Length: 202
Image 1 (cartoon, rainbow, N blue to C red):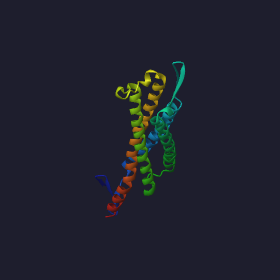
Image 2 (cartoon, rainbow, N blue to C red):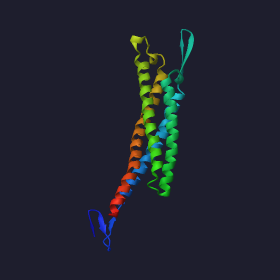
Image 3 (cartoon, rainbow, N blue to C red):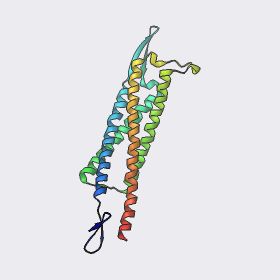
Image 4 (cartoon, rainbow, N blue to C red):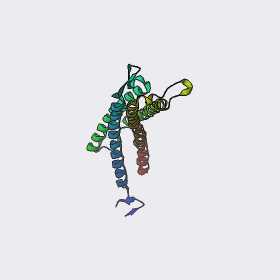
């Protein structure tokens, strides 16, 4: 006999069915694993595209070489995406171990560490993309008031590859924002679970 999802045992003890919560847990863990693998892959793509981008141009018989180290914002993008990729790889391995072992919930201190790490990654990746996008706009459009010329008119290939790298970094930053939401859900449901258990006892 059951009413509103609450079964009644022969001893009149409430029995709570957790089938729905298990399905949600499984979907959350799969989504987290996919996103972390995506961040790892796209972070590496952004690092490779920006970090290996060079172009040599001859100006008035003088060869000038454009590389990512000429712009501090691009250096920031490479470093941040490299760190985010490595961090996501570690977290993806943790997700796999958790799924294989069948552990759905973990300790609160570990949940806080993961939540804090994901928050930091979200903030720094968004900041890196914002800084790189601003530099890219100046390189593409120039700034006549400051007599900054349109660099991309001379280094078209370099700018195109940097643009592809920034696009990959943008996807990384969006994914880290979603991941930070998932880690917040994983953290705060630990506290919600305790309330549910305490209420079930009464």
